[in-house]
Structures are given as structure tokens and as C-alpha cells.
Image (cartoon, rainbow, N blue to C red; front, side, top):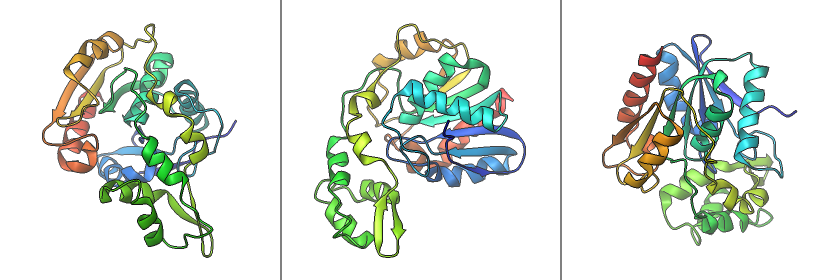
Length: 259
């Protein structure tokens, strides 16, 4: 079985796994990882399948992505870990907590609920899929091309972190764009009604984000009986990047109480 790629920050202490969001990678969380490591954690920045430096697969479902994390933990002899997951990574984490609770001691979900979401990444995916690397030979050219589908500079900056040099003068994408384009329904999937977990957990919401609504709270508490909720004011879905200091303070303080 293929094992997920990771960048491990810190050499000892409580193991903390971080699962990135859709079209992201573990390295997006490097700044937070260094701060957690300074508090005595060993942080595993994991690339999920079809993302970053991890393997590509035509199969892209949350149960499979949860199994990937199980295999990663077995390979690295990890158990009773802390896990932090944002967006898609939070969905993977919810499946993991419900199906493999013995692996986790506590977890944090950042700005995602257990519900089903309608597909909403199609324009971004189309923009990435249309990048023609036979003609595009610089990051600037890729940025200009992508701007036709993705007008927001901050979003493009995040997406273009997926660019890398396959060979001198030849760019490519780290994400498996062909599979991800076909996976909008899978990315939006919610938890089954039978999925439940008793593990201690914290859901952190961005105040201006619409990913977690008031109407989602009963569902969160149904699936996760010991869930707590915290809100970061004046931030959206990218709460960990928009107010990194407060996000880190909330996450690190909550994990410290679970030690």
C-alpha cells in the first residue's frame, strides 16, 4: 500500500497530525507546525492523496482518505495522536474519528461541518485544468492565465503553490487535477447517520464563513457528543491564515487541556 508523504517538524513529544484542505498541502501549515513544535509536539504535515507529494489515485473518497491516515500511523508506529484538520482535511478527520477512534486522543476540526456540501470548486478546477504547460513556462504566466477563472489574487497565490518544476523549463501541478475535477460530489459528501464519536473535539469556525452555520450545530453534536465550538471573529474559511495568532492560541490551549 502507498503511504502518504509527510514533513515531520520536531523530533519528540506528543504526535500531532495536520490534514490540509482541498487543493492544499501539508506545507501550507509549516508556520503553525514550527510553533507547535516549540511547545513540545512532533508535528506531521501530511499530504493527502492526489495532493502535494503524496501518491495519485483514481479513488478519492473520505473513507479511503481516512484509511490512508490509518496506514500512515501504522507505518510510523503512532497511536493516541492529536489531529487537526481544515476543510477537506476536517472531513477526513471526522471519518477517522468515527471509524478508528482508538488512534486518536483528541482532535480539532477547522471550519467544516459533518453535512453534505454542494459542489462549488468547479471554476477553480476548470482554471487549473486549462493551464497549458506546453505554453506556460513561468509562474507569472501561469498566474495571468489562471486569473481568467480565478480573479482573487490571494486565492491564486494559494493555488499556485501547487506549481513545481518537473524538469528545467517545464512546469506541472502537484495536484491530480483530472481526478479532482471529477470528485466534486465526493468532496462535498457528509457523514452517514450512523457515524458517531465520543472523542473530545473542538470545532473552530470563522465568523464570516458560511461553512458552519447555526443550523449545523445540532448535527455536530449528534455526530460528536463531546464537541466544543469556538469562533474566530472577522475571518472567513481561511481562519488559520487570516488570524494565525488567535487560531494558534485557541488550538494550542485546547490541545494542552487534553494532555
